[in-house]
Image 1 (spheres, rainbow, N blue to C red):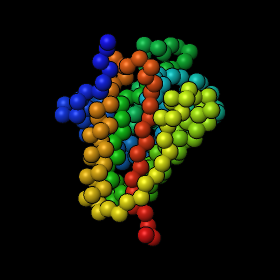
Image 2 (cartoon, rainbow, N blue to C red):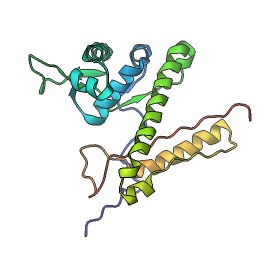
Image 3 (spheres, helix red, strand yellow):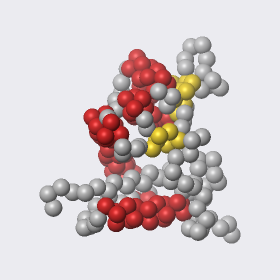
Length: 204
């Protein structure tokens, strides 16, 4: 019998801090590149599904390939995507994400408030689209996967310090299940996206 249990909490395999070799921290240049919603979508698709062409990405998003080609070049200038030389040819260029994850620095609200808001707005839009797609697919999911999906919200009265502590504890739990794409996966495992939003609610 194979032990498929996650690694113990006392020996986390991952860090929730950016790895300079694999992750990118948003600065002004990256912020300007990702503030456009289509660019955020293109980068998300390349990270989720792997290398692709402008034409294939355009078909997936329902836009013309000229638009995806232009925005991919803008992402490349910002260092967020690179050409996949192993797949490309003289007729069509393949692109791949240059990093695993993007980390946002809230201090950007002091230097670039409008761009920071636009960037996080595009992130929130992507989260909403992910959930909407999952709901559309629920009728065709197996019973066990349908029962595992959750769409809930919970209200608390917390200080900023308490909220930060709560999220740190949640990340400790998530870390027990977190794996890299090339790690051995349990039988029956599927790619699962866990979306977490936490924010103060005005007027209460």
